[in-house]
Image (cartoon, rainbow, N blue to C red; front, side):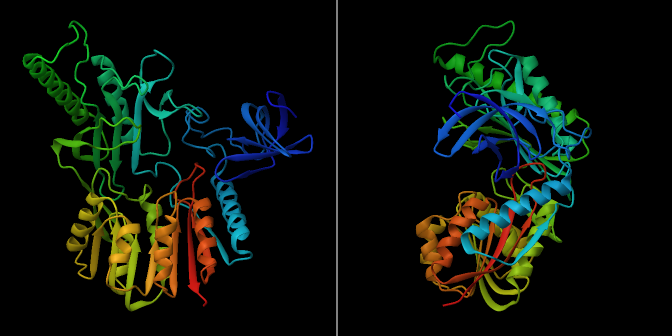
Amino acid sequence: MKKGEIHEGIVESIDFPNKGILLTDGERVIVKNALPGQRIRFAVNKRQKGRAEGRLLEVLEKAALEKETGICPHFGICGGCLYQSLPYEEQLKIKARQVKEMVEKACGNWNFEGIKGSPVSEGYRNKMEFSFGDEYKDGPLALGMHRRGSFYDIVTTRDCQIVHPDFCRILEVTLDYFAGAGIPYYKKLQHRGYLRHLLVRRAVKTGEILAGLVTTTQTDWQTEGEGVFQGTDTHLKIQEEKREKELLAGWRQALEKAELAGTFAGILHIKNDSLSDVVRSDEVEVLSGRDYFYEELLGTKFKITPFSFFQTNSLGAEVLYETVREYVGDTKDKVVFDLYSGTGTIAQITSLVADRVVGVEIVEEAVEAARENALANGFNNCEFIAGDVLKVVGEIEEKPDVIILDPPRDGIHPKALQKIIGFGVEQIVYVSCKPTSLVRDLEVLMGNGYQVEKGCCVDMFPHTGNIETIVALRRIK
């Protein structure tokens, strides 16, 4: 098997997160985004001793388990979903096997308690970050998700099935409005253009919606019937700002006229001039309403701001946090540290049965929301600290009895993990959204006197390759 060759084969299994595994000519081949049971054609693009990697060219035959109907029209084109064509029960089996095998490699046989499915597998997401661009070079304006395997091309996802229809309607109204106005999107290579992203968050329980248009501060765009503004003359700048205000007012009015099941809590203009493609904010302008909305989990109300972390599957989050609470167990008269606490969801749910909970989170607006949430819900035994866990955790005078870890996808910084181990707590509950990061950190914890007691998965991301894992550890020496 040589680089550049075209081969065919049947996919035997799939490793996390999207690595289809084949055996061809006695060699192991990895082809991303290929599903077990599919017969595929692929091109070899990387070759190492005893192993090769290929690029999927075509699915010649579907797997026997793949559905013929009920599949998202964007599936296979959009890079969002991997398992859309498989029955949901089959998706759960694949994810459970992946996590079980990965953790076993780190700690040997362990008490794996299986996988819990999401209460709903369609329309479950409460947050989307859509990108502006074009579907092909110099094509018409597009708004949606990146095309699978492409950094530039955008697929307009008008019929996405993992979000509530309100998301699709907001996307459609926004795209039609700005395409009609002839407003340019931000081109990443030239660093020119105006439209960057559309941020939409929607609460399942309250139906409140937050919509944010993310743009640059470049306002010298050209519209039909007018020339391009040039120069830095004060008069021209005033005219540019006036035009932008009129443009944004028109967008807000278009959204407010849209027929939606939910209601707008706020419509925002978010300015972002960073060179990276990350959705972030330099400045937020409230066009109407407020810059936050409310969601409810397990009878507790949470205030959520545009960029604060909150699980993207609200109903699934209830399953996740109930499981975390079960794994934490009896915390009466105990101090709990909730590290990487986001808007304080785990901290507040745990505080019901703890003496005191201390949450640490690097995003300041999330910490502020967590404090307000705790106050509003009557939890007076919670404290939230803004800062990096690596820098803050060693400065906390209080010592924990139990530590809950819910880090971002890349896991815990090695130095921060050593500080956490240094507390010497008897019990740690680790919540992970990326099994490979979890396994890396488990190896360190086990090398420092901790033993995996049990673990399970909660599927927060149906149809995608992602999975949430909860592991309970206990100190043995």
